[in-house]
Each structure stands twice: as structure tokens, then as C-alpha cells.
Image 1 (cartoon, one colour):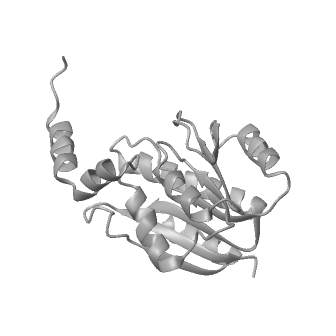
Image 2 (tube, rainbow, N blue to C red; image 1 turned 180 degrees about the horizontal axis):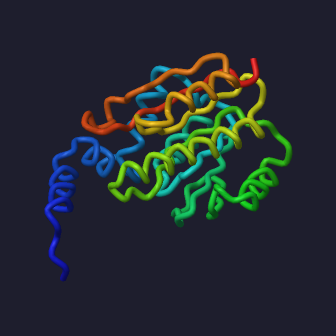
Length: 207
């Protein structure tokens, strides 16, 4: 059995003492990330009965788990991820690389021309530990999410994306403001304080 590195031991110890990991396991959520969306939802009310939502980078599925409960029978949740995701009742899942034109075309086919209320993304690149490489890759995913949102959102629709503070975020935020009425930076309590992770909420597309 391979010996754990110091960093992996620290990660494991942090997971074991993380109250959100414990709560997620106890409640049947697939990851602690659900509490980030839950805390944003409590303030912003992005997901309501009847909402049509696309969840980018959905695996292992906790955001979709919460979303499908909130949108109800009249709503719809479409999820996409490069990784496999165990089925969730009521969620339409596409396993594919979101950044390819072929996947975007498949998503649009699934939508059948119906405009979307909310595009949400908890996507992040595979982290190498080299910020000079990781940050541009993260921003590239943000740009892909924004491009997709501009193609499928209804007027007045919303976009929620995970970002990492650093180079390129100010420019990306300016791009958001060109398309949406308001842009807000959110740091949910469930985001680890030491993390550069933030969420950008862009509301009211095209108005």
C-alpha cells in the first residue's frame, strides 16, 4: 500500500474534522459542496418550483440533489460532467466534456429550444498546485460557462459560478457585467476560510 504524503494526511485529517463532511454523510448528500449551494439559495432564492436549471460540472451530484428537490415536479434539472455520476431521480445527466462543441450541441438538443432560468457551475480544473497554470485553466472554465449561459438563458435568467480569486477574475467580472444587470461575489460559510474559492452570482441576463 503506498505511503501517504504529508499533504494527503493533512487533507484526510481536515476531512475527518470537517463538520460539513459529517453533516453531508449523515443526511445522504453526496458531498459537502451541497451546503455552499444551500447557503447561497437561502439568501438568493435562485431555485424555485418550476425552475429549469443546468448544472455544469455536476459530479458527484450534491448540487443536482438539492436542485431537483427545490424545482419540484414542474421544474427540470439537466446535469453534465466529464466524470460518471450515479443516477439521481428526476435529474437528466449527460456524461461528457462540457468544453467541447459536441457536448454543448447535445445539451441544446436536450433543451429543445426551451430557455433556461439558471446555469450553475461548481466546476474546477484538476489542481496541479501550480497557480500560474491552475488559475488560467479555472478562468477558461468560467468563460466557457458564461458563453454557454449567453446561448441558453432566458431574458432575466441567472448564472452562478465558482471562481478562485486571482489573475483574470476582475476581467471576467467585467464581462459578466456586460451581460447581466448585477454581479455579486459570495463566500459561503461552507467554503473553507483559507480557500481562494468564491462564487460569482450574475443576475438578470440581458436586461
